[in-house]
Length: 256
Image: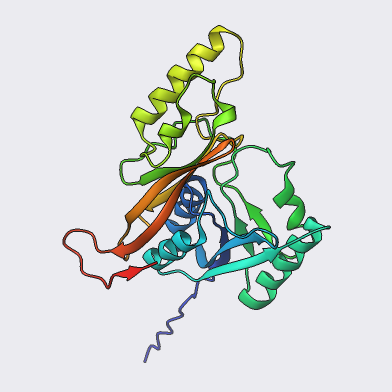
């Protein structure tokens, strides 16, 4: 008699957390690991919130909470503060490692605009940094038809005085918007002035994603909002948002 022994190999996926603001970069970085579910397990979205900040104007937390519902993911708000911000970040990394088993922190960084701060923040914490968008040319990876992205904030001082930068706020981040920014840049290049980065990597503008492939439970519907100008900034005030089912789907609706 022949005995057949069957062995089952269980693949261990790497646990990762996403440094998440709700904008295009962090959502695209999330997509990179979300589509590799055989390798990565996304255990949580994490927003690092400065202790002295009343609210994020460019990336409102109440909108991020609805995004997390749309993705069916845990959402953590982790407070960071001074005077030693680096140590504060590291304490949170250690907490992610200890309480959530996080092995990799995924960020949407494209350029070293903050002196590789996050790279230093994960040192000696047992967590590695994964930056899937690092060094990618703009805007080749930005325009994806399955994403709906809104411009949530503009620093008007980054644009030429005659350009109506505040008119971008609340508008879709799409090819038409990029064409407007390119035209602005062409005019600035003619007089040897610095261009606006097409991904807003130097703080020229910020975005919020309201629909994406990872939003498996529905999309974020902006029920009410308005543009608010304060000093050099123009923001979109998300007054009411809710999770709604896409056409042909049925999910509970949650307002925020």
